[in-house]
Length: 213
Length: 237
Image 1 (cartoon, each protein chain N blue to C red):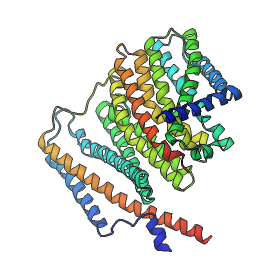
Image 2: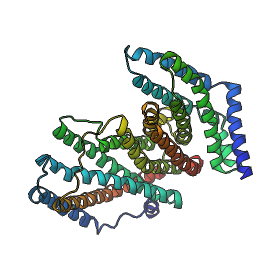
Image 3: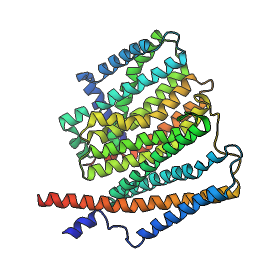
């Protein structure tokens, strides 16, 4: 178990270090989410309700995550790292967990900019919304890592990933928007926890089949 | 050589039972609709238009059955690594997608007759089938854009397993969303069905399942021949 945690930590550190050095993904995500929020301001007619604005915030979050996911296995593919990782004497699910942790960190960093920007541009945030975003990040990173690995094996990678991801993201959006605007957000937060748990376990268990040549 | 190629995709379903399934589907569907139209009482609220219930709901349940069957075959593929399960899972999901599309169409017709709108977000089953339709259409995109081989078989199997988990999760999501986002005003389900309606419904359901089984067998045979032929052609080229 200790060795497993060590493998996961090493793999997550590799992703974060790679990003710190190359700055490939995160600046793009930040710029994208702020641009999207700016567009939403002009897309919404003046006098739109706060509920509509909150809904658009969730669209921005999902699409920003998608942008990060498209790049998730780019470095591995270009550098031929994946073969090395598969050959490495570690459990393959550790690759999934390390990558998921790395992606969650990216998402949280992107939202540390996106949520204050949203509060500045539109209206103040509730704690329920912040909690829902944090829970959604875990779910998005869990299924996103697995789907990105599936899409990386196909010819139409960048095209395929959104198609695979968006139907699975619909429950996240339902739970997130519900937790943000409902007067009783408890059931929606509970649903997000359930979603995270179910799909994290499923992705963790099935990643080995996706990554093996 | 040809036998080894064929056996790689599995032996075909025994041809003896094929006509049996087809005959059962025909008899049960004709009988079921006859019961539904001439024997089961008319619904007190919706009148004659409620008869589409005997078509819409069996089709929807058959779609679920096909998706479940496809996921079971996908699980078998991952479990045993036998390649023949790939085509079986693919065929089942292919059938599920066709029945899912029919569910959307018949549900839409029902919504138009009952409420005057072709589409209503308040109807949970329709929304759920829209999500599933999008999901399983992506399954086809995944298959078409990945090169044939063990990698595609396993990736498709994992995605099919995600689908069968997505069904209850989406069901729950659409349900809790209905409490706040889109309040459900109309419901199809009455308190309880009269027993004549239930009998007619069950016969229709059995007929629809037999129809799905027949189509599954025909399609599976076709897909197997197609796959074997393609491999044979590659060997000869």
